[in-house]
Length: 259
Image (tube, rainbow, N blue to C red; front, side, top):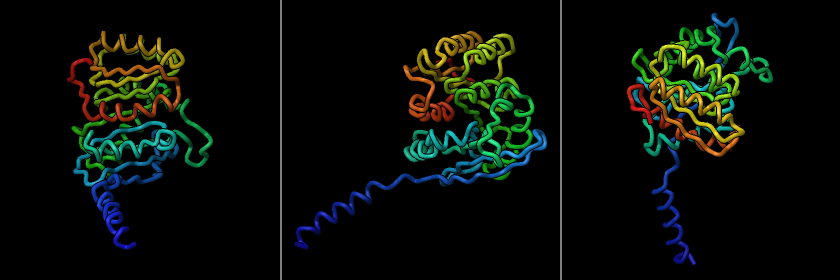
């Protein structure tokens, strides 16, 4: 009996040795930060990849608590980095809720091109991340990412802080009325030095407004990576595109040709 089971045991042991688990990065947080600019506390989580050499590229993610929960983005980062599809990056998941009252969202007073919220990033959050975690400097590759109203925020940051983020990632930016306002801003103002990744679904996901905005970006000669699906305004559409978003951040540069 033992002789018959021994080969099977060895095969299982060999298979485990040949198929190691993903090398998981470390997720720290929630970490509270007190903002003098905004006059209140916020919190964030930060994903640090294993064995990353400083300076580490920085991807800032609005509605970070949702990307970690519904988006399961930590696992996507582990898989993309461990399989060599992207170079190691740090992801900063910024909570859009009041840390003391998590049922209270601050999205409406922060996301629609609010100058103080942008100033908080530029003068408080980003310096803390670079000093404490990533070893970043002015030349560090940085991006801002958001879904729905957070996608609008990413577009706003491109104009409010030109040059601060090399890549703007917008997943289903919404609503259509907000996106039309953003479209007019980008049409009227001087081009900012960012590359843009934009994805959206079908008619139930502001498709018409998104396509108008993409047309404006191309007319203004922004480097654009555009993905359209038949999906809706939900995580069934957004989650499968997280790997595309990460690869765009890792590989899309402002000097790239329009794609």
